[in-house]
Length: 213
Length: 213
DNA sequence: TAAATTCTGTTGCAATTGCAACAAAAAACA
DNA sequence: TGTTTTTTGTTGCAATTGCAACAGAATTTA
Image: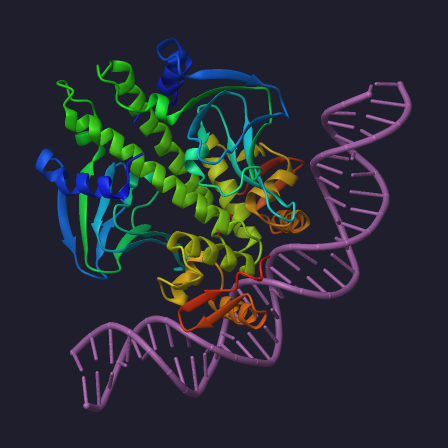
């Protein structure tokens, strides 16, 4: 598997190697891409943060995924029925590489080194995505809001190697991400604080390692 | 992307091409593999059905994934802390191909056609996995048991192109898969039936296309 | 800098869900 | 085949969660 650094190196150079890979810059709060039926677009987030969101028929918003640098996304992963269902929205100013699967992933006749490496890089990116999704699924399968919060804090704490951290999104978005009611989540945060599992100070959380469950 | 048929063709021949890919047969209810820290095993389910399950500290069982033929799994996708956390259990008699990532995915010097194709096939398998996971996530983010059931029935109905179908697992397992209490789920099934959204007859479900929500 | 918008924190209340427990049916086993 | 185990279907009750609504803080926009 490739390291984050190697992947970054490669994506930075992608356009030099392949004219089919295009890039664009998208300002904060703008739509990076919508999901279009029967198009097979891959995108790699070169810079910035973005959310993949869905609006259901009732207008309820769900954050499907939160994307960070080097994350991959695109229609290939969502066989959708109707367009206008899924959007990718820039949370900060972003830079995106995008290309069609057909244009780039097929073997070229002269089996160039570039395409070989691209294949390997894609493998790495996809594996990373699967890992991220597994973490999300683990979290969503927790039966209670408390369990979801603890699972989320746990993975955040692990990935940052610290018991104290800032929640990297608003509590409103966190509720969407955990797929629970915001006010119920706030109530549960208070209760976790009162029970001594966490210390909450605004969006700064400190886990109490003594108390585990 | 490769079709299911092409992938099947390829996996059947995998062992002829590569001595590192091994296979084994596992009888129903036996453990196919446990997840071992720092080992990078890929497995492809050649024949049969299997579940990836997790037991948490309280002994609660969660079905993380249900695997069917051509599905891919392995440690690469679960960065786990402790072994003995995740198991893959055969639901029917199974045949499995397994190999270490290191042994097989690295470029070989003579850039053989086989490795090139393997890389492309892996890309296809991983993409399929991501799609499956996205369906699961979509389902799990539904806030109510009713929503989860409808989302599940919907995708089942679509993949089988029929409004009538048999649930491919027991209701006990379905509750695990949807991550809800079984008795509450049974209650909701009854209510869906009474409200005319479905006709339930044992494990046979018929969707009422008139009623949509 | 003022106005508008979004986010946080809170609460009461109603609806949903989980838990526990049990009997009947079905499936697995020996 | 008869016995054991698992699954289904049900219910009462308690706990959790979602919904609605609101005020104040913080942030964004003009």
